[in-house]
Image 1 (cartoon, rainbow, N blue to C red):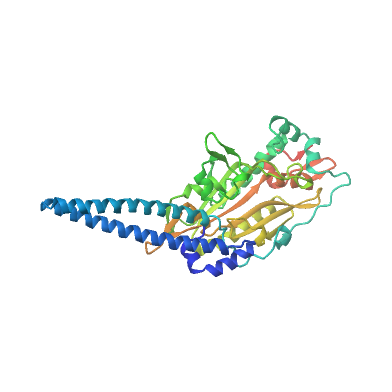
Image 2 (image 1 turned 180 degrees about the horizontal axis):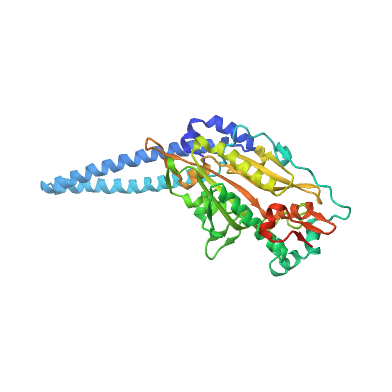
Length: 423
């Protein structure tokens, strides 16, 4: 959520910046300013009435003590009217604050100045590319056929037991999943991250805190009886550890990593690009989260980007990094880099990670602050990245490493899988 003082002081500039996200903020920002003016006026009127009521209360008490009962009763009637007016103003103030907050949460985060203009992923900016596109043998097949051939992933069984988008991993497929999870966790821990195993369910306050609610409510699985949501990513519970928290400058950087199942409804997804592991409703992911001092958050973003690059390099996967344009940038992000790996049998790039700086947007919603050296309370910056999401990594590993004799396991994973070949 954007800070109200910043909106008031930089109204025209924020309207201009949000236009990069293809968001017309003019009407909402004007409403926010008007509501804030009304809030301030109502608060002043209420304070004046309460002050007047207090004076009358003292006067009534003095009149009763001096025996001027009739005069006291007259003023008492006036005091009762003031209290009624005060209650009306309190209701008006409460309604105004609620309306103001409802408008504030409609505004997306301001994009970083480096974010290019654009409408979709077709307008994203290619930043970096590394690796050699593998040349497959003549009989190469896509990963969903490899999964069936070697009996390592069963999509039909998942559809039978649950529905489309909930596959079963079996045998060496399950062990490959576990190997990747442990590899990703070990790499993050070696970089100084503290491992958590978070709950898979969150309350609405947590969803609001990191910006999934109300923006992405339709994409989340909801358990109505308990008023809980299945997490779309470990980012949500891990970042919300620090909701309503005041840190010290010496606490920075806070570095956490978590493996979790992730659940996304993916409503409206269909077509060839969602076959097999390309898009699932339940999938595994290792997430890295950092809480950082505002002056250092963009250096941290680059460090996280380098860390994710290292993972893909060690897996021997060709990859590229793109900077998301305004139209493809999420509601909460100020700057996001996407990582894509090349899937040789499908002949397409697959997104496997996003690393983002949210600046103070999430922190403002969560009331996540720190005390500076002068003891002043300020908003921290939050960042997160997928390091990594498993489904498309598995798809690329299966397709790119297939041979006539089986699927070769990358060297870095062999100590985790305890096998060299899927055949």
